[in-house]
Structures are given as C-alpha cells and as structure tokens.
Length: 443
Image 1 (cartoon, helix red, strand yellow):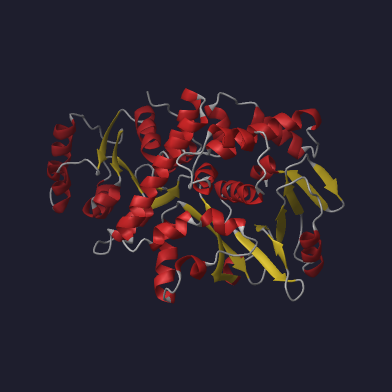
Image 2 (cartoon, rainbow, N blue to C red):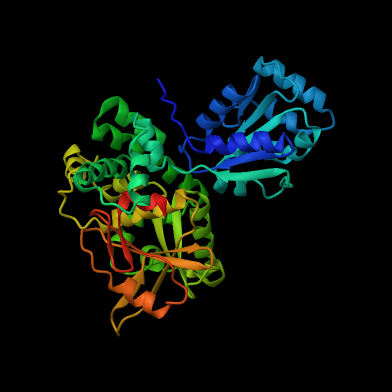
C-alpha cells in the first residue's frame, strides 16, 4: 500500500486553481521520485469532479498521436474521454500530463488547450529531460513553473504523525529561548530526518519497516535511477561521476567543488554543459561564490566557483557510504546517536543547504584570504530586505565564529543579523545568534 503524504505545495496548487481559473497551466518540476505524480493525482481527486491522468511514460502511440494535429480539439477530448473512460466537465475537470518530457508535442499543445479554456492542465516532469526533448517545439508562455523539493523537516514530522514539534520549535525560535531539557530529544529526532531524508519512498520504508537497512535499499534504488538517467544523457559517465563525488568533495577542506580533480581534463564548454545538466536535474543544489556579498548576490555570483550539495540529505548519506553493499544498520544507529567517529560536518552543511532551498533561498557563500595558506569562509549568505545575513556552520557544539566576526567587521554596513548554526542549544553570543541546526527552516 502506497502511503500518501501531506505536501506544502498542495496549497500553492490550490492558489493557482483559485486565482488563474484555467488561464495558465502549471508545470511541477523536480527530481525523479520526489513525489510529483502522487501530489498532482491527489490534488485532482480532491479538487475536481473528474480528471484524466496521461502518464507519458506508459501512454500508447494512439494517445501521443492525438497531439500531432490540434485542428479539432473536440475530437481530441472525445478520444481522451473514450480511451480513459472518464467524462470531462467544462471548468470542473483537469487533465494531467505526467512526465510531459516524453511527449514534446503535448507540451507544445498547452498553449492551445489553455486558450480553449474548457479544462485545467497540470504537467509534471524533470527539467533535465524536458530541455533535452524540447529543442524543436515552441514552449508555451501560458505555463507557470514550480518546483517540488524532497519533503522538508515539517513534512517529515507530519508523515510520522507529529504535528506538534515544528510549531513548538518555531515558538522557541521566536521567543529566543533555549529548549533546555527537550533539546537532546529534538536533536535526535532531527538526525533521524538527516538519515532517512525526504524522498517519499524512503520515508514510507521507514514508517512501514522501522529498519534502516530497508530504507537504505530504497535510497540506493533511487540513486541508481539517477545514475541511469545521467548515463543516458552523458554516456561518457562524467555526469554520473560529478554526482557520485558530491560527498567526498564536500568532506574535503577546500572551499569549492574541484571539477577538474574529479573529471580530469575536460574542456570549459563541456564542463559548463555537464554542470548545467546536473543543476537542472534537481538532484543537486549549487551554491555559488558571491564575489561581492551584497543584496543583489546573483549579480556578483562567480559561476566558476561553486559548492555542490545533494538535494536530499538522506541520499547524501547513502552516497557517502556507497562503497559498502548496503549501509549497515549499525552505521545508521551510530549516526542517529551521534556516535560515529567521522567528522560529520559536511552532512550538517548539506542538510542546511537543503533546508534553506526548501524555504526558497538561493545559495551563496563567500571566502577571502586569511593568510598565505588559509581562508575565512562564510558558508551561506541570505539576502533580507536591504541587508544580508551571514551564516557560519559548525558540525560540533564548538561555538567560536572567527570567520563570522571578521566578515561582519569587513562588511559592517551591509550586515543585519548574523548566525552560527551548530549542534547545540539556542543562545546569544553578543551580536551572534547561535542556532540549533533544526531551526534553520525559520531563517
């Protein structure tokens, strides 16, 4: 039995339906297995009198060929109703184009279908394949795009039947109070999220089996799907390698992803193409170096200097232990209880990147020379109004923040709030707020 989880993007779909009233289609992008199809079908069932879901992974040639000729929309709608055995009702039905990248002409048809105005249209797809398959078609301007990310921490707690934790944490955050006795349990709960991650299948496996080996098996299956996709796009294997090396690159002390160290000699143009494909796949998150940390950080981003994170920290953990046939329960138990010897700073950095992205932040970082051999580094920079909020990440309870102090001195006129995100309880240290990692979502 497939578990259906509550997703926040559902509210965004409701708003689209209410405000747009069929004047635009909506395309939900996201990595494979992130829950796009489940979300849109649940939405169609609940919010419309009837719906047709065309899964272009499975659709027959007969269905696909309907979009070759749009002269007679009445004929197309009649055929669809008869093939799917569904009665469509004017302004009360929705047609879903699932995995729309596999039928480019259906994507092109959106313009005319929306203008016709009888029904609503929702599309899903992974951007990487959409781009590959839309070279020769006219992309519809009548289309809004939104991204479905892996489940965030609150969605994960909902899945476990817990609606209390996140509002409670928010209340502590807003009142600037430490959790005191409750902190240890909340930290352990959060480490569980880091291990399982936010891919619905992995969360399902955890709920149904309570067995980390089973969860890991599911996550390995998802990673394998990504690797197969990368192989199709780039048979040389370089794209797959870039993805697989994310944990090892992040665990090194260098302050960026060293593409040439991973791939060897590859031309600048080819590297840019590979990076764009990796970013578009939504399986990875890119944080770019801001050469001038200020409010308009996109204007000063350096596209040749970046860090890469996994879009889902649960998959990141599985990738980090990929050399084992399966990540044994004992590794998971040690990670869960914070007993694994490895420096896990990079896992925390990854989950912070994931949480900031889930809250619609673009990722930027900043480094500058400390001396001939060392750098200062601000791990994340947030733009808020006319000011910036710098963030330094510490994987331990270690609460010194030299980089943060030097940065705030250097750019004092630009900085409003400053944060150290770490694995201990909430507290203030002068102008710096020391924030437990699970409160990142409130920034």
